[in-house]
Image 1 (cartoon, helix red, strand yellow):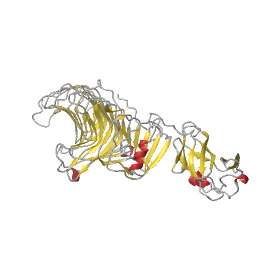
Image 2 (cartoon, one colour; image 1 turned 90 degrees about the vertical axis):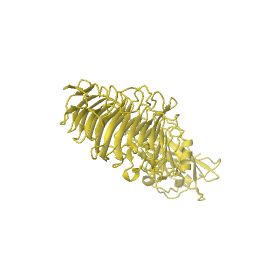
Image 3 (cartoon, helix red, strand yellow; image 1 turned 120 degrees about the horizontal axis):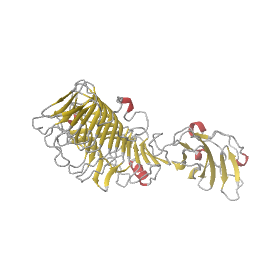
Image 4 (cartoon, one colour; image 1 turned 45 degrees about the vertical axis):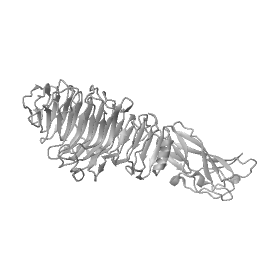
Length: 552
Protein backbone atom coordinates (compact mmCIF):
# COMPACT_ATOMS: atom_id res chain seq x y z
CA UNK A 1 0.00 0.00 0.00
CA UNK A 2 1.01 3.62 -0.50
CA UNK A 3 1.70 4.91 2.98
CA UNK A 4 2.56 8.54 2.59
CA UNK A 5 4.22 11.34 0.67
CA UNK A 6 6.98 13.62 1.78
CA UNK A 7 7.05 16.51 -0.61
CA UNK A 8 7.71 15.09 -4.05
CA UNK A 9 9.22 11.84 -2.78
CA UNK A 10 6.49 9.21 -2.62
CA UNK A 11 7.23 6.31 -0.28
CA UNK A 12 5.81 2.85 -0.67
CA UNK A 13 6.29 0.05 1.85
CA UNK A 14 7.13 -3.40 0.56
CA UNK A 15 6.65 -5.13 3.93
CA UNK A 16 3.58 -7.35 3.59
CA UNK A 17 0.75 -6.49 6.00
CA UNK A 18 2.62 -3.54 7.46
CA UNK A 19 0.56 -0.55 8.57
CA UNK A 20 3.63 1.48 9.38
CA UNK A 21 6.27 2.45 6.85
CA UNK A 22 9.97 1.86 7.11
CA UNK A 23 10.77 5.58 7.20
CA UNK A 24 9.49 8.32 9.44
CA UNK A 25 10.23 11.31 7.25
CA UNK A 26 13.11 12.78 9.24
CA UNK A 27 14.80 14.72 6.43
CA UNK A 28 18.38 15.76 6.87
CA UNK A 29 19.44 17.79 3.85
CA UNK A 30 18.56 21.15 2.37
CA UNK A 31 17.64 20.94 -1.34
CA UNK A 32 19.65 23.96 -2.35
CA UNK A 33 22.88 22.91 -0.66
CA UNK A 34 22.98 19.18 -1.30
CA UNK A 35 20.00 18.30 -3.48
CA UNK A 36 18.31 16.34 -0.71
CA UNK A 37 14.92 17.28 0.76
CA UNK A 38 14.41 20.07 3.27
CA UNK A 39 14.26 19.83 7.06
CA UNK A 40 10.95 18.57 8.56
CA UNK A 41 9.75 17.49 11.96
CA UNK A 42 9.76 13.75 12.58
CA UNK A 43 6.27 12.32 12.14
CA UNK A 44 4.90 8.79 11.83
CA UNK A 45 4.72 8.02 8.13
CA UNK A 46 0.98 7.47 8.18
CA UNK A 47 0.49 11.00 9.53
CA UNK A 48 3.06 12.71 7.31
CA UNK A 49 1.45 15.61 5.47
CA UNK A 50 2.06 16.30 1.79
CA UNK A 51 4.47 19.23 1.76
CA UNK A 52 5.25 21.20 -1.40
CA UNK A 53 9.00 20.96 -1.19
CA UNK A 54 11.22 22.56 -3.86
CA UNK A 55 11.93 20.35 -6.84
CA UNK A 56 15.55 19.74 -7.74
CA UNK A 57 16.14 21.66 -10.96
CA UNK A 58 18.67 21.02 -13.70
CA UNK A 59 19.48 23.73 -16.22
CA UNK A 60 21.77 22.14 -18.82
CA UNK A 61 22.30 18.83 -20.62
CA UNK A 62 24.98 16.80 -18.92
CA UNK A 63 24.56 18.54 -15.56
CA UNK A 64 24.82 16.02 -12.75
CA UNK A 65 23.40 16.26 -9.24
CA UNK A 66 23.60 13.83 -6.32
CA UNK A 67 20.67 13.07 -4.00
CA UNK A 68 21.47 11.78 -0.53
CA UNK A 69 18.19 9.90 -0.32
CA UNK A 70 19.52 7.40 2.23
CA UNK A 71 20.45 10.22 4.60
CA UNK A 72 17.07 11.85 4.14
CA UNK A 73 15.07 9.06 5.80
CA UNK A 74 15.48 6.79 8.83
CA UNK A 75 13.19 4.15 10.18
CA UNK A 76 11.34 4.60 13.51
CA UNK A 77 13.94 2.50 15.31
CA UNK A 78 16.70 4.88 14.14
CA UNK A 79 18.41 2.18 12.08
CA UNK A 80 20.38 3.85 9.27
CA UNK A 81 19.01 3.33 5.79
CA UNK A 82 21.10 2.36 2.78
CA UNK A 83 20.38 3.04 -0.87
CA UNK A 84 20.45 -0.38 -2.55
CA UNK A 85 18.92 0.16 -6.00
CA UNK A 86 18.11 2.93 -8.48
CA UNK A 87 15.65 2.67 -11.36
CA UNK A 88 15.85 4.21 -14.81
CA UNK A 89 15.26 7.85 -15.66
CA UNK A 90 12.20 8.41 -17.83
CA UNK A 91 13.28 11.44 -19.90
CA UNK A 92 15.14 10.68 -23.12
CA UNK A 93 18.91 10.92 -22.77
CA UNK A 94 18.83 11.18 -18.97
CA UNK A 95 20.50 8.69 -16.67
CA UNK A 96 20.07 7.72 -13.01
CA UNK A 97 22.66 5.60 -11.22
CA UNK A 98 23.70 4.51 -7.75
CA UNK A 99 27.06 6.16 -7.11
CA UNK A 100 28.86 6.01 -3.74
CA UNK A 101 25.62 5.50 -1.84
CA UNK A 102 23.79 8.34 -3.57
CA UNK A 103 21.30 8.65 -6.37
CA UNK A 104 23.08 10.43 -9.20
CA UNK A 105 20.95 12.02 -11.90
CA UNK A 106 22.43 13.24 -15.19
CA UNK A 107 20.20 15.30 -17.46
CA UNK A 108 19.71 14.67 -21.14
CA UNK A 109 18.62 17.35 -23.58
CA UNK A 110 14.86 16.99 -22.96
CA UNK A 111 12.90 19.42 -20.78
CA UNK A 112 10.25 18.06 -18.41
CA UNK A 113 9.41 16.37 -15.10
CA UNK A 114 11.35 13.16 -14.56
CA UNK A 115 10.62 10.36 -12.14
CA UNK A 116 13.18 7.94 -10.75
CA UNK A 117 12.46 5.05 -8.40
CA UNK A 118 14.92 3.97 -5.75
CA UNK A 119 15.05 1.35 -3.03
CA UNK A 120 16.24 1.84 0.55
CA UNK A 121 16.97 -0.84 3.14
CA UNK A 122 17.59 -0.98 6.87
CA UNK A 123 19.11 -4.43 6.56
CA UNK A 124 15.81 -6.21 7.24
CA UNK A 125 13.09 -4.42 5.30
CA UNK A 126 13.08 -2.48 2.05
CA UNK A 127 11.01 0.41 0.79
CA UNK A 128 10.73 1.74 -2.74
CA UNK A 129 10.34 5.45 -3.33
CA UNK A 130 9.95 7.79 -6.27
CA UNK A 131 11.96 10.97 -6.78
CA UNK A 132 10.70 13.70 -9.10
CA UNK A 133 12.95 16.25 -10.78
CA UNK A 134 12.25 19.21 -13.00
CA UNK A 135 14.67 19.25 -15.93
CA UNK A 136 14.90 22.53 -17.85
CA UNK A 137 17.25 22.38 -20.82
CA UNK A 138 15.35 24.29 -23.49
CA UNK A 139 17.87 27.15 -23.55
CA UNK A 140 20.93 24.91 -23.56
CA UNK A 141 22.75 23.56 -26.59
CA UNK A 142 22.84 19.81 -26.77
CA UNK A 143 26.08 18.11 -27.69
CA UNK A 144 26.67 15.43 -30.28
CA UNK A 145 29.88 13.58 -29.55
CA UNK A 146 31.35 16.72 -27.98
CA UNK A 147 32.01 18.28 -31.40
CA UNK A 148 29.91 21.42 -30.97
CA UNK A 149 28.01 23.28 -28.31
CA UNK A 150 29.03 22.19 -24.84
CA UNK A 151 32.63 21.20 -24.27
CA UNK A 152 31.91 17.83 -22.70
CA UNK A 153 29.39 15.40 -24.19
CA UNK A 154 26.35 14.49 -22.15
CA UNK A 155 27.28 11.53 -19.92
CA UNK A 156 24.93 8.65 -19.29
CA UNK A 157 26.81 7.60 -16.17
CA UNK A 158 29.52 9.16 -14.02
CA UNK A 159 32.16 7.13 -12.20
CA UNK A 160 34.54 8.84 -9.74
CA UNK A 161 37.96 7.29 -9.13
CA UNK A 162 40.90 8.23 -6.92
CA UNK A 163 43.39 5.36 -7.39
CA UNK A 164 44.89 3.31 -10.19
CA UNK A 165 42.98 0.20 -9.15
CA UNK A 166 39.71 2.12 -9.25
CA UNK A 167 40.61 3.57 -12.65
CA UNK A 168 41.43 0.14 -14.07
CA UNK A 169 38.17 -1.25 -12.69
CA UNK A 170 36.17 1.65 -14.13
CA UNK A 171 37.75 1.14 -17.56
CA UNK A 172 37.15 -2.61 -17.42
CA UNK A 173 33.43 -2.12 -16.80
CA UNK A 174 32.93 1.06 -18.84
CA UNK A 175 30.25 1.41 -21.46
CA UNK A 176 29.32 4.08 -24.03
CA UNK A 177 28.33 7.33 -22.36
CA UNK A 178 30.44 6.81 -19.24
CA UNK A 179 32.34 9.74 -17.76
CA UNK A 180 35.23 8.52 -15.62
CA UNK A 181 36.39 11.37 -13.38
CA UNK A 182 39.88 11.24 -11.86
CA UNK A 183 40.60 12.93 -8.54
CA UNK A 184 43.90 14.79 -8.27
CA UNK A 185 46.93 12.55 -7.97
CA UNK A 186 49.45 10.22 -9.61
CA UNK A 187 47.94 7.13 -11.24
CA UNK A 188 51.03 4.94 -11.45
CA UNK A 189 54.08 4.38 -13.63
CA UNK A 190 52.47 2.20 -16.30
CA UNK A 191 50.40 3.60 -19.17
CA UNK A 192 46.64 3.16 -19.04
CA UNK A 193 45.02 0.95 -21.69
CA UNK A 194 41.34 1.78 -22.28
CA UNK A 195 39.96 -1.38 -23.92
CA UNK A 196 36.43 0.01 -23.98
CA UNK A 197 34.92 2.11 -26.78
CA UNK A 198 32.19 4.70 -27.00
CA UNK A 199 30.01 5.84 -29.88
CA UNK A 200 29.90 9.12 -31.79
CA UNK A 201 26.86 10.22 -29.75
CA UNK A 202 28.02 8.76 -26.44
CA UNK A 203 31.83 8.66 -26.20
CA UNK A 204 33.64 7.32 -23.16
CA UNK A 205 35.14 10.33 -21.37
CA UNK A 206 38.20 9.99 -19.13
CA UNK A 207 38.76 13.35 -17.46
CA UNK A 208 40.48 15.01 -14.55
CA UNK A 209 38.21 16.46 -11.89
CA UNK A 210 40.54 19.48 -11.89
CA UNK A 211 42.35 20.39 -15.09
CA UNK A 212 45.79 18.67 -15.19
CA UNK A 213 45.32 17.64 -11.57
CA UNK A 214 45.54 13.94 -12.49
CA UNK A 215 48.82 12.58 -13.91
CA UNK A 216 48.95 9.50 -16.12
CA UNK A 217 52.12 7.84 -17.35
CA UNK A 218 50.77 7.64 -20.87
CA UNK A 219 47.72 6.15 -22.57
CA UNK A 220 47.94 3.16 -24.89
CA UNK A 221 44.89 3.34 -27.16
CA UNK A 222 44.22 -0.12 -28.66
CA UNK A 223 43.54 -0.35 -32.38
CA UNK A 224 40.01 -1.59 -31.64
CA UNK A 225 39.17 1.49 -29.55
CA UNK A 226 37.07 4.35 -30.81
CA UNK A 227 35.29 7.42 -29.47
CA UNK A 228 37.36 7.79 -26.30
CA UNK A 229 37.82 11.39 -25.12
CA UNK A 230 40.68 12.06 -22.68
CA UNK A 231 40.16 15.45 -21.07
CA UNK A 232 42.34 17.61 -18.81
CA UNK A 233 45.01 15.01 -18.01
CA UNK A 234 48.62 15.91 -17.17
CA UNK A 235 50.85 14.02 -19.64
CA UNK A 236 54.09 15.81 -18.84
CA UNK A 237 57.18 13.56 -18.62
CA UNK A 238 55.18 10.44 -19.38
CA UNK A 239 56.39 7.16 -20.83
CA UNK A 240 54.48 7.53 -24.07
CA UNK A 241 50.93 7.86 -25.30
CA UNK A 242 50.21 5.81 -28.42
CA UNK A 243 47.26 7.15 -30.36
CA UNK A 244 45.52 4.41 -32.31
CA UNK A 245 41.92 3.65 -33.12
CA UNK A 246 39.19 5.83 -34.57
CA UNK A 247 37.91 9.24 -33.43
CA UNK A 248 39.85 9.17 -30.15
CA UNK A 249 40.66 12.57 -28.64
CA UNK A 250 43.07 14.34 -26.30
CA UNK A 251 41.53 17.62 -25.08
CA UNK A 252 43.03 20.16 -22.64
CA UNK A 253 45.99 17.90 -21.84
CA UNK A 254 49.51 19.14 -21.11
CA UNK A 255 52.06 17.32 -23.30
CA UNK A 256 55.79 17.20 -22.62
CA UNK A 257 58.07 14.32 -23.68
CA UNK A 258 59.79 12.21 -21.08
CA UNK A 259 63.32 13.13 -20.03
CA UNK A 260 65.72 11.03 -17.98
CA UNK A 261 68.39 13.25 -16.35
CA UNK A 262 70.61 10.24 -15.63
CA UNK A 263 70.83 8.94 -19.20
CA UNK A 264 70.33 12.34 -20.86
CA UNK A 265 67.72 10.76 -23.10
CA UNK A 266 64.13 11.56 -23.87
CA UNK A 267 61.27 10.21 -25.92
CA UNK A 268 58.07 11.19 -27.70
CA UNK A 269 55.04 12.25 -25.68
CA UNK A 270 52.35 11.22 -28.20
CA UNK A 271 52.95 8.79 -31.07
CA UNK A 272 50.29 8.87 -33.78
CA UNK A 273 50.58 5.31 -34.98
CA UNK A 274 50.67 4.01 -38.55
CA UNK A 275 52.33 0.67 -38.04
CA UNK A 276 50.27 -1.58 -40.30
CA UNK A 277 46.84 -1.73 -41.88
CA UNK A 278 45.61 -3.10 -38.55
CA UNK A 279 47.44 -0.71 -36.20
CA UNK A 280 46.90 2.97 -36.91
CA UNK A 281 45.11 6.16 -35.89
CA UNK A 282 42.14 7.33 -37.95
CA UNK A 283 40.30 10.66 -37.62
CA UNK A 284 41.67 11.35 -34.13
CA UNK A 285 42.01 14.80 -32.57
CA UNK A 286 44.29 16.75 -30.21
CA UNK A 287 42.74 20.05 -29.11
CA UNK A 288 43.19 22.85 -26.56
CA UNK A 289 46.47 21.34 -25.33
CA UNK A 290 49.87 22.69 -24.28
CA UNK A 291 52.83 21.36 -26.30
CA UNK A 292 56.01 21.83 -24.23
CA UNK A 293 59.62 20.84 -24.89
CA UNK A 294 62.45 20.79 -22.36
CA UNK A 295 64.83 23.74 -22.30
CA UNK A 296 68.63 24.05 -22.16
CA UNK A 297 69.16 22.87 -18.62
CA UNK A 298 67.66 19.53 -19.60
CA UNK A 299 68.80 18.84 -23.15
CA UNK A 300 72.45 19.94 -23.26
CA UNK A 301 74.55 16.89 -24.02
CA UNK A 302 71.81 14.83 -25.63
CA UNK A 303 72.91 12.62 -28.51
CA UNK A 304 72.11 13.62 -32.07
CA UNK A 305 69.96 10.52 -32.56
CA UNK A 306 67.79 11.32 -29.56
CA UNK A 307 64.17 12.06 -30.47
CA UNK A 308 62.33 14.67 -28.44
CA UNK A 309 58.83 15.47 -29.75
CA UNK A 310 55.44 16.38 -28.32
CA UNK A 311 53.59 14.69 -31.20
CA UNK A 312 55.15 12.49 -33.86
CA UNK A 313 53.69 10.43 -36.66
CA UNK A 314 55.05 6.89 -36.82
CA UNK A 315 55.10 4.82 -39.98
CA UNK A 316 57.16 1.71 -39.09
CA UNK A 317 58.31 1.35 -42.68
CA UNK A 318 54.89 0.59 -44.14
CA UNK A 319 54.43 1.33 -47.82
CA UNK A 320 51.41 3.58 -47.31
CA UNK A 321 50.46 5.97 -44.50
CA UNK A 322 47.52 4.81 -42.44
CA UNK A 323 47.52 7.51 -39.75
CA UNK A 324 45.12 9.86 -41.53
CA UNK A 325 42.76 12.75 -40.81
CA UNK A 326 44.32 13.85 -37.52
CA UNK A 327 43.27 17.34 -36.38
CA UNK A 328 45.58 19.26 -34.02
CA UNK A 329 44.02 22.57 -33.03
CA UNK A 330 44.02 25.47 -30.57
CA UNK A 331 47.28 24.49 -28.89
CA UNK A 332 49.99 26.46 -27.12
CA UNK A 333 53.63 25.97 -28.20
CA UNK A 334 56.06 26.22 -25.25
CA UNK A 335 59.77 25.78 -24.61
CA UNK A 336 62.58 24.04 -26.41
CA UNK A 337 66.39 24.28 -26.27
CA UNK A 338 68.11 27.58 -27.06
CA UNK A 339 71.83 26.74 -27.10
CA UNK A 340 71.71 23.10 -28.20
CA UNK A 341 73.34 22.18 -31.50
CA UNK A 342 70.84 21.67 -34.33
CA UNK A 343 69.31 18.18 -34.16
CA UNK A 344 70.94 17.44 -30.81
CA UNK A 345 68.41 16.47 -29.72
CA UNK A 346 66.22 15.93 -32.75
CA UNK A 347 63.30 17.75 -31.20
CA UNK A 348 60.19 19.40 -32.55
CA UNK A 349 56.79 20.17 -31.16
CA UNK A 350 55.23 18.25 -34.07
CA UNK A 351 56.81 15.96 -36.65
CA UNK A 352 54.76 14.26 -39.34
CA UNK A 353 56.48 11.23 -40.81
CA UNK A 354 55.76 8.69 -43.49
CA UNK A 355 57.95 6.02 -45.00
CA UNK A 356 60.55 7.03 -47.55
CA UNK A 357 59.15 4.20 -49.66
CA UNK A 358 55.58 5.42 -49.39
CA UNK A 359 53.52 6.47 -52.38
CA UNK A 360 53.05 9.91 -50.81
CA UNK A 361 49.35 9.37 -50.46
CA UNK A 362 47.99 12.38 -48.48
CA UNK A 363 47.63 11.85 -44.75
CA UNK A 364 45.23 14.80 -44.41
CA UNK A 365 46.54 16.13 -41.11
CA UNK A 366 45.11 19.55 -40.24
CA UNK A 367 47.18 21.67 -37.81
CA UNK A 368 45.46 24.94 -37.00
CA UNK A 369 45.11 27.76 -34.45
CA UNK A 370 48.33 27.76 -32.44
CA UNK A 371 50.50 30.29 -30.64
CA UNK A 372 54.04 30.29 -29.29
CA UNK A 373 56.45 32.94 -28.04
CA UNK A 374 60.05 33.00 -26.81
CA UNK A 375 60.76 29.98 -29.00
CA UNK A 376 64.43 29.02 -28.98
CA UNK A 377 67.30 29.63 -31.35
CA UNK A 378 67.76 26.16 -32.84
CA UNK A 379 64.15 25.14 -32.76
CA UNK A 380 62.27 23.49 -35.60
CA UNK A 381 58.73 24.04 -34.41
CA UNK A 382 57.09 21.72 -36.93
CA UNK A 383 58.95 19.30 -39.21
CA UNK A 384 56.58 18.10 -41.92
CA UNK A 385 57.70 14.91 -43.68
CA UNK A 386 54.46 13.71 -45.21
CA UNK A 387 52.06 14.58 -48.00
CA UNK A 388 48.75 16.35 -47.70
CA UNK A 389 49.36 18.26 -44.45
CA UNK A 390 47.70 21.63 -43.77
CA UNK A 391 49.37 24.05 -41.32
CA UNK A 392 47.46 27.29 -40.88
CA UNK A 393 46.32 30.07 -38.56
CA UNK A 394 49.37 30.21 -36.32
CA UNK A 395 51.42 32.92 -34.62
CA UNK A 396 54.93 32.09 -33.38
CA UNK A 397 57.75 34.31 -32.14
CA UNK A 398 61.23 32.82 -32.25
CA UNK A 399 64.44 34.17 -30.77
CA UNK A 400 67.75 34.96 -32.52
CA UNK A 401 66.50 34.30 -36.03
CA UNK A 402 66.56 30.48 -36.08
CA UNK A 403 63.06 29.16 -35.27
CA UNK A 404 61.35 27.52 -38.23
CA UNK A 405 58.49 25.56 -39.70
CA UNK A 406 59.86 23.31 -42.42
CA UNK A 407 58.41 21.03 -45.07
CA UNK A 408 61.07 18.38 -45.65
CA UNK A 409 59.28 15.74 -47.64
CA UNK A 410 56.10 14.84 -49.46
CA UNK A 411 53.80 16.72 -51.79
CA UNK A 412 50.50 18.59 -51.85
CA UNK A 413 50.76 20.27 -48.43
CA UNK A 414 49.35 23.69 -47.63
CA UNK A 415 50.64 26.49 -45.38
CA UNK A 416 48.75 29.77 -44.87
CA UNK A 417 48.04 32.52 -42.35
CA UNK A 418 51.31 31.99 -40.49
CA UNK A 419 52.62 35.07 -38.72
CA UNK A 420 55.47 36.21 -36.51
CA UNK A 421 59.18 35.47 -36.19
CA UNK A 422 59.99 32.15 -37.85
CA UNK A 423 61.46 30.85 -41.09
CA UNK A 424 59.25 28.96 -43.51
CA UNK A 425 61.56 26.44 -45.23
CA UNK A 426 60.65 24.10 -48.11
CA UNK A 427 62.45 21.04 -49.50
CA UNK A 428 59.20 19.70 -50.87
CA UNK A 429 57.53 18.17 -53.86
CA UNK A 430 54.80 19.29 -56.26
CA UNK A 431 51.59 20.89 -55.10
CA UNK A 432 52.93 22.58 -51.96
CA UNK A 433 51.61 26.12 -51.37
CA UNK A 434 52.52 28.83 -48.85
CA UNK A 435 50.58 32.08 -48.90
CA UNK A 436 48.95 34.90 -46.95
CA UNK A 437 51.65 34.95 -44.27
CA UNK A 438 53.25 37.89 -42.45
CA UNK A 439 56.86 37.14 -41.48
CA UNK A 440 59.23 39.42 -39.52
CA UNK A 441 62.27 40.95 -41.24
CA UNK A 442 64.72 38.74 -39.31
CA UNK A 443 63.26 35.66 -41.01
CA UNK A 444 62.73 34.30 -44.53
CA UNK A 445 60.50 32.20 -46.75
CA UNK A 446 62.91 29.83 -48.55
CA UNK A 447 62.67 27.40 -51.45
CA UNK A 448 65.81 25.30 -51.02
CA UNK A 449 68.21 23.80 -53.44
CA UNK A 450 68.83 20.18 -52.55
CA UNK A 451 71.60 17.80 -51.66
CA UNK A 452 69.66 15.22 -53.70
CA UNK A 453 67.03 15.61 -56.42
CA UNK A 454 63.41 15.62 -55.39
CA UNK A 455 61.84 12.17 -55.64
CA UNK A 456 58.97 10.25 -54.12
CA UNK A 457 61.13 7.58 -52.56
CA UNK A 458 64.65 7.14 -51.35
CA UNK A 459 66.85 9.01 -48.93
CA UNK A 460 65.59 11.48 -46.38
CA UNK A 461 68.29 13.96 -47.38
CA UNK A 462 67.58 17.61 -48.10
CA UNK A 463 65.78 17.26 -51.43
CA UNK A 464 65.49 20.05 -53.95
CA UNK A 465 62.29 22.09 -53.70
CA UNK A 466 60.04 21.41 -56.69
CA UNK A 467 57.04 23.39 -58.00
CA UNK A 468 56.45 25.41 -54.82
CA UNK A 469 53.82 28.20 -54.93
CA UNK A 470 54.58 31.27 -52.77
CA UNK A 471 52.04 34.08 -52.62
CA UNK A 472 50.84 37.15 -50.71
CA UNK A 473 53.70 37.26 -48.23
CA UNK A 474 53.74 40.32 -45.96
CA UNK A 475 56.02 41.70 -43.29
CA UNK A 476 59.64 42.63 -43.70
CA UNK A 477 60.97 39.18 -44.59
CA UNK A 478 62.68 38.16 -47.80
CA UNK A 479 61.71 35.34 -50.17
CA UNK A 480 64.73 33.31 -51.25
CA UNK A 481 64.50 30.87 -54.17
CA UNK A 482 67.55 28.60 -54.29
CA UNK A 483 68.62 28.95 -50.66
CA UNK A 484 71.25 26.53 -49.40
CA UNK A 485 73.06 25.86 -46.14
CA UNK A 486 76.32 24.78 -47.80
CA UNK A 487 77.93 24.31 -51.19
CA UNK A 488 76.74 20.71 -51.57
CA UNK A 489 73.16 21.93 -52.09
CA UNK A 490 73.69 21.68 -55.86
CA UNK A 491 70.28 20.50 -57.14
CA UNK A 492 68.48 23.73 -58.01
CA UNK A 493 65.00 24.47 -56.76
CA UNK A 494 62.81 24.33 -59.83
CA UNK A 495 59.32 25.38 -60.85
CA UNK A 496 58.90 27.95 -58.04
CA UNK A 497 56.07 30.43 -58.62
CA UNK A 498 55.99 33.73 -56.71
CA UNK A 499 52.54 35.33 -56.92
CA UNK A 500 50.54 38.22 -55.52
CA UNK A 501 51.94 40.67 -53.00
CA UNK A 502 55.58 40.59 -51.94
CA UNK A 503 57.07 41.41 -48.53
CA UNK A 504 59.08 44.61 -48.19
CA UNK A 505 62.23 42.49 -48.43
CA UNK A 506 61.19 41.34 -51.89
CA UNK A 507 62.46 38.10 -53.35
CA UNK A 508 65.78 36.97 -54.77
CA UNK A 509 66.98 34.07 -56.90
CA UNK A 510 70.12 32.42 -55.54
CA UNK A 511 72.65 29.79 -56.57
CA UNK A 512 71.29 29.32 -60.08
CA UNK A 513 67.65 28.71 -59.14
CA UNK A 514 64.93 30.70 -60.90
CA UNK A 515 61.27 31.49 -60.29
CA UNK A 516 58.34 32.82 -62.29
CA UNK A 517 56.64 35.98 -61.04
CA UNK A 518 52.93 36.74 -61.35
CA UNK A 519 51.35 39.83 -59.79
CA UNK A 520 47.97 38.10 -59.48
CA UNK A 521 47.31 34.88 -57.56
CA UNK A 522 46.61 32.13 -60.05
CA UNK A 523 47.65 28.99 -58.16
CA UNK A 524 46.08 29.61 -54.75
CA UNK A 525 42.95 31.12 -53.21
CA UNK A 526 43.78 34.18 -51.06
CA UNK A 527 42.85 33.80 -47.40
CA UNK A 528 42.26 36.44 -44.69
CA UNK A 529 45.32 37.03 -42.55
CA UNK A 530 44.92 37.42 -38.79
CA UNK A 531 46.94 36.98 -35.62
CA UNK A 532 46.26 34.26 -33.09
CA UNK A 533 46.62 35.46 -29.49
CA UNK A 534 47.80 33.37 -26.52
CA UNK A 535 44.40 33.69 -24.86
CA UNK A 536 42.77 31.76 -27.72
CA UNK A 537 44.75 28.55 -27.37
CA UNK A 538 45.98 26.01 -24.83
CA UNK A 539 44.48 24.27 -21.85
CA UNK A 540 42.90 27.42 -20.38
CA UNK A 541 41.47 28.94 -23.56
CA UNK A 542 37.72 29.59 -23.68
CA UNK A 543 35.81 26.84 -25.43
CA UNK A 544 34.65 27.85 -28.91
CA UNK A 545 34.04 24.39 -30.32
CA UNK A 546 36.10 22.14 -32.56
CA UNK A 547 37.17 22.65 -36.15
CA UNK A 548 35.65 21.02 -39.18
CA UNK A 549 38.70 21.12 -41.47
CA UNK A 550 38.05 22.85 -44.79
CA UNK A 551 41.13 23.40 -46.89
CA UNK A 552 40.83 26.14 -49.54
